[in-house]
Length: 390
Image 1: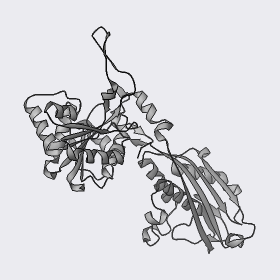
Image 2 (image 1 turned 30 degrees about the horizontal axis):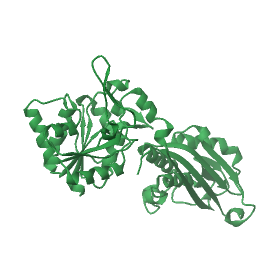
Image 3 (image 1 turned 45 degrees about the vertical axis):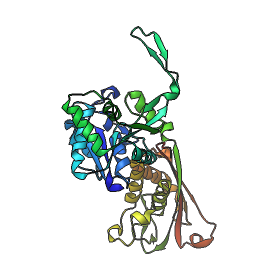
Image 4 (image 1 turned 60 degrees about the vertical axis):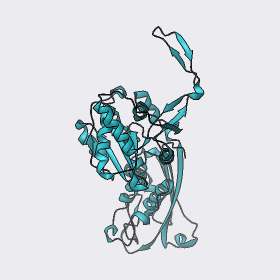
């Protein structure tokens, strides 16, 4: 299935209604360009064999940042209309021969993998399948004088979204026919399919799959309701004492009569926090991403591990709400270094220092920490990810 499904992500518009100095698809949500999140939706989906971005010729530099390290086909440039841009993307896919194509607007960064599943399934028995959500308000038709002429039956109305799914060869043929006949101005590909007399069905869309158009839309996207997927992860790390003249704790070098033994710098606080963030993402643990068997991590500074985990949160369009770590040891004394450690942790993950808690305790002479054989750290991370049903 993966090789038979392709996606065209349309990002060639100017987005002037969103305000600002550059197109809306490159504005940031939770530290990441809108376009990146839209591309990620398809690039990380094993069912999608090819992702074709369509951009404006003036946006190469902006696109390079948004698409950094993503598995995409080479970008193509769009035309003067959305219709022309989609056609350019479809033509670029011809050599890949997909059976199904999904067409998605870059300005809808909150679509979910479940929506992709429904799109692929729905187009199996139709020429075209489009996501729609019911209309909850009463809708009235008016004349040129703004006088009501009809109250529409909202039970039969749907607000349409993307990704829209089509048989690839069918949609390409329709686009070519419309271009040959000079038919322009279709607002979405479903309208083009309707013009061609194709069967278009509507499947269940998502209320959270909003299109970012105005400054108010971006304000809403940055609000807590759009980051309503609250996650908590925990982490635990332990290292034994060995030879040395300092320990690394919380990203701070603390003089001590012994060091901690580990493949990296053995910073138990940063290791525990790294695992807490990865746990909140359900994204493995520190050993998965930085295996101790790999010599490149020997004596590595653990701030690299924590920064990596924080970046994973941002790449998911998320936000770190709070980090908390407890260090358990008899020595060294943590209190004099507490503020420096909190400051350093905040710098590494890119949050305000008041979102980092750090505590220290002894184990009342019990266990390996009580006997002074090593140090342990327990951490909790709270993050928010964009709301995504399913």
